[in-house]
Structure formats: C-alpha cells, structure tokens
Image (cartoon, rainbow, N blue to C red; front, side, top):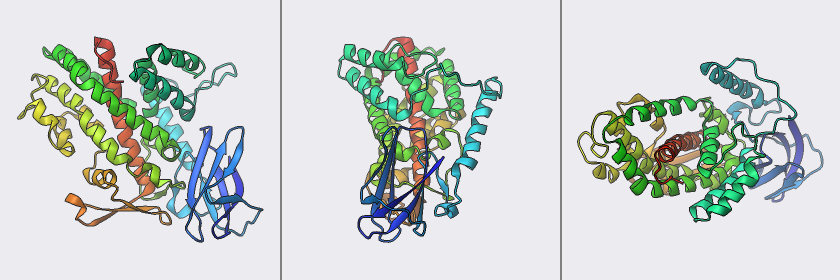
Length: 404
C-alpha cells in the first residue's frame, strides 16, 4: 500500500508530494533532501500514531504540482523511477522475495503452497519490536544480572511468535540472528555446520574448544554485541535492503535508496569489517583442524602470528575451503578504510558516495551508490552473524563460555 502525503521544506517552502510505501516495522523513519534547496527533510510513520514531520518538514496542503519523493522502508527503487509517480518497487522486488522463499522451502522439502495463517496463531515479532527487548536482556546478561535477563526474556518471548520458544538467552539470540540471515544464507550456515562436524572428529578439537572459551569468547562476544547495536539501531536505513540481501537479490548501482540518513551508517562498514576480520579467526582454527593440523598451526605461520596479521588477508587462510571461503565473500579493505576513517563524502542529490582508493586514500576516486553501500554493509553483517551462530553452537554444545 502507498500513502500519498504532502510536506513543505521549512527552509525554502517547497511542497513535496510524498508517496510512502507501508512496510512491516512499527516505526518507519525516512530522510531525504529538499528537491529545491537541498536541505535534509524527514518524516516518520508510527503504528497507532500516524505521521510525524521533521526535521525541516511540515505537513502541507495538497499540491500535486510539487516534486515527487518516493519512500519505502523495505525496498530500494530503480534509479530511473525514483522520481516517478508510477514507481512500485514492492511489485517487482516483492515477487522476487516470494520466489526466493519458495526456492528455500523446496530445497528443504517443504511444499510450495504456503499454509494459511490462523487468526489464533501469534504474529512473529517485528525486528524493531524484538531488538530492544533482546538488547536489554543481552546487556543484563553481559553485566552479570542473570536473573534480570531471564525475567526480561520470559516476559517477552512467549508473545514473540516463535514456533520453538527460546528457553535461554543464547537460544533467543541464536534464533533471532538466524531469522536475520534467511532464506539464502541458510545454505552457508548449513555448510558451516557440516565443516564443524568434520573438525569435531579431529584429535585437537577439544583443545580448540577450551581455547575458544577461555581466550576468544569474551572479546568476540563484545564485538557481536556492538555490531548488532549499530546495525539494528539503524535498521530504518538498513531495512531498505536487508531482506533483499538475505534473499540474495542484487542491489547495485541500478538502485537508489530513497531514505539516506548517511550519518547513522557512514562508519558501519568499517566497524563491521574490523569485527569480522578479528572473529574469522574461529574459521581459520576450524580449517586448521580440517586440514589435519593442530588448531593453532596454519600452513606456514602460527595462530598467534595469524591473529596479529593484517585483517584484509585473513580470509586467505581458508580460501581453499569453499564452505568457509563463501562466508568471506564481502570483505573490501578499501571500503573499510574509507568508512572506518570517515573519509567518504556523500551527495544526497545523486545518492552517490565517493572515496579514495589506495593506501592512505591516495589513489583514484571511487564512487558507490548509497543503496549498494547499504547492501554491502548488510551482507557483511549477515556474514558476521553466521560466524556468531557457529560460535554460540560450539560454546553451548561443549560447555564453554558463550560469546555473548
């Protein structure tokens, strides 16, 4: 469904025709530029409340002669349609999402026909409904307030629509982040699980598990928590591409993200790159076991030397293992440098980001569309969540410290 509304720029008075697509989340925040003076404008849609205007925007009387601004919380737009009154991204992209879901069902042997929804069945909690509850419980758990964390969890999960209601904080996190990676990346998860099964039968596996719990878990858990806070705290931006990425539907330079709150996402890729570059040491250790070496011995260097090496090359340690290498498909050191150091400039009018390549940002100028940047950030986040699930599984099954 599309709602038509009118907003005037507080700076120059230009009235804009807003075509607002309705998404699933209870709060939908949009940021866009005034088509006349270029100042940032904003509007939010909240369940049970309605529209709120700002920054720099005021509800206006109907004026269909103004510039058209298309907005949607769950989809990006074709570049040539971003200012068109005939843009309906939910039709084309929505059908692709359905196809991806049906393909996933067929792969695991489920019928193509979807079961009819029962009015008695609880509705699955939406991401921005569930995340504040999970974040609070997770934070309490990290602070040693286990009783309070359990009370917070018990008060929420029974109404969150889970088929298999979580009974522990690790189970809750495991199921929640698993939902964020489906349907496409479930294949990568299944391959990771198979590789873990191979490693678990190696002689040095028990020593790896003990080392993981004692030496890796605390630092890894802190990184997972911080990246989840950053990504899910800015989900109103990332939701434009998240399900498309999770369904392996391309988002590239042909697409435009209608909402562009770049300040909230500017440094995400760089920070996620750093966290992922550190935590893939778990995959390197598993690969060592698979290749019949001690977990802390790579082909040419020790595990400690690997841990101090440059992050950009760490995926090469298991590059010959397709299942592990697939989890490092998105890992761009040039984009990391620009994002991590705040060296990207954003043109809201064109929706393009520019940064410099090369060491120290001394190379040629590189441009990337904001929609593509969001998609690559989402893909990196999902990759990190796959490793997170693997670490939770290992810790939970073998009784060592959880990475939470």
